[in-house]
Amino acid sequence: MGYAFTFHVVNSLGGIPIGAYVHYPTISTDMLERVRSRKKWHTNADAVSSSAVLSRGKLVYYRLFMYYYARSLRVARFLMVNSSWTKGHVDAILQHSDPLLDILLLVPSLLLFRSPNAGLTHAEIVYPPCDTREMAKFAVEGREKIIMSIAQFRPEKDHAAQLQSFQHLIKLYPEHENITRLVLLGGSRNAEDSERVDGLRKLARDLDIGKHVQFIVNAPYPEMLDLLSRASIGMNTMVDEHFGINVVEYMAAGVIPVVHASGGPLKDIVVPVNEQLT
Image 1 (cartoon, rainbow, N blue to C red):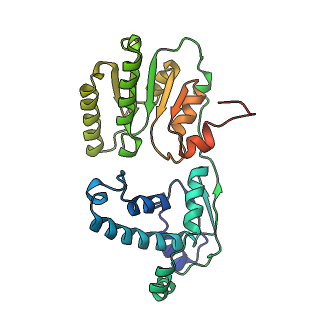
Image 2: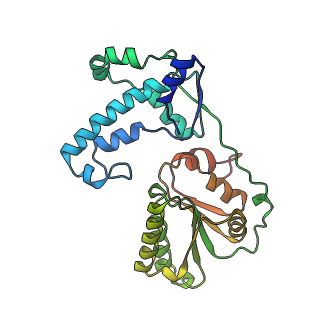
C-alpha cells in the first residue's frame, strides 16, 4: 500500500534494511495537480474543488504530505511496484522536490526524517501473480451475450459509467436489448459499499435498464469462473487502474476486454504482442 512512514520506525529502532512492494502510492503527483486545478475526483470532493479556500488549504496539506512521503520512501534500500503506471508515479515521488519546503522544514526534516538512501530514484517492476490456469481451459466458442464486470464496489471503479455505457449501447442497437445482459460482480467490504450497490441498482432502474442488469455481490470463486466461461465482453472503467488483474482474467478466459485506456491495462496488459493486437 505504500505506508512509507513506518519505514523510519523500523529503520531507527532496529537498523533493519527495508525493501517494499508498493501496490499503489498513498499520494501521487496527479492528486496534487487535481487539487491545484480544482478538479472534482473521488480523492477531491466537490465541496473542496468548488471552494478556493478549501482547495488552497488542501493543497498545502498535500504538499506537506508529498514532501515527507517522498523522504520516507527513500529510506528503503529498494522498491518494487506492480505496473508501469505505478512505477511512473513512484519514480516521480522519489524524484520529487519542493525547494520552498526544503528551506522552511530543513531542521525538522533532518531530525525526524533522515534518509540513509537519499539517492534512491527509481523502483523496479514486479508484476503480480495471476493464476489463470482454470480460465485458460475455457472454450472461446458458444459464448452468451453477457457483458461482465469484475471489481470491488468502490467509488474509483466507476460502475456508474458501466451502466451508462450499457444504456447507450441499447439505445444505439435496440435489437440487442432483450438478448444482452450486463453482470456486475464484485466484493462489498462494508456498509458504505452496500449503500453504493443500492445506489447503482437505483441508477439502473432510473436508466430503464434494470431488468437487463444483474448484481452479484461477494460471489464465490466458482461462480465467477462460471460467468467468465460464458461471457463475451469484460469491462473495466477505472481511470488509472494500477495494474488490472481482472483484465488479465478476461483475456485468459477468452473474454474481450473493453477497458479504460489508462494505467496498467493500457501500458502492461492490453498491449501488442509480436506486433499483433491483443
